[in-house]
Image (tube, rainbow, N blue to C red; front, top):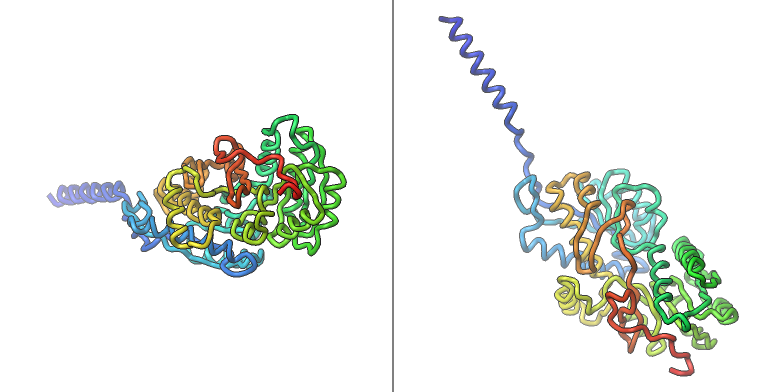
Length: 405
């Protein structure tokens, strides 16, 4: 009898043990917030850019949190976003320090701008921290094989391909034949020039690379060289002071290209037109977002931006901040987890429509695109002139000469 009772007891113990083994372990409690790191230009020489970007980030986070946050399947609940905001002040070394800092704060992803490349991105890669890069064109860091780095901004090769395609879209008999590429001696300037030269030569254009310091006090020698070789098109990236100086000296020296694209310097319409007046018309630059775009949510975003910033008309940085949160919310939702590796894998399969347009990533983490967007100043307003499917106005080509204005 005792043996029978002992046998039954053992059977029951084994059965209970098997049930316990088959039952999933209790899930860890859900965190109070989902931490996302922001490393941007809160202070420093381009703080206005970083502050505008940060407005867009905060606005979309507020919108998401009003609805309870991001739904995480692993916890079967919505969890609000908490931003861990830090300042690199356009300093590469500070960006590395801040990348280390946000990693220690337990963020699930980080958004970095401008000088976050390359050091901050390298730190993120070291820790397996998903990283979304904004307000930066650099191509080289994406050739290093990083797996946790993504960007929804065009790269320098995308810009070059776009500019040459824009020239090719002009009537053949009116196209420029020679391009003056204004080449800043810093890394980004060299990248811009190298890819543009490659695209131009492959499409039958003549090219002259004209070097300058990114904060040059005088651009007359470079302008006179472009004028001497008869360059009918000019292309380059310039900081704001240099870009404004270049236009003023082009007018003084009567240099009249048929088309001129000066990126970065011409991006902010408030500074460009506010400083140059009518002389700023007809110049082109790249822009991801301008007023009048018809992507879902774009009109609502513009209305909110204008209400909060009534004297500003530079929507691009704020829209990038807003869209970067859209991208991370989409990826984290699809990951169903706050595990960094799962979020990284979800980012790699992104296929969505943000307020800045359709978004997919290439295997190297760069944004998949046919062309970037070119705008031209017409009557003081940025109008999309390329690509054709987004065009708001036909390009005014050739630019009126200084004497015709």
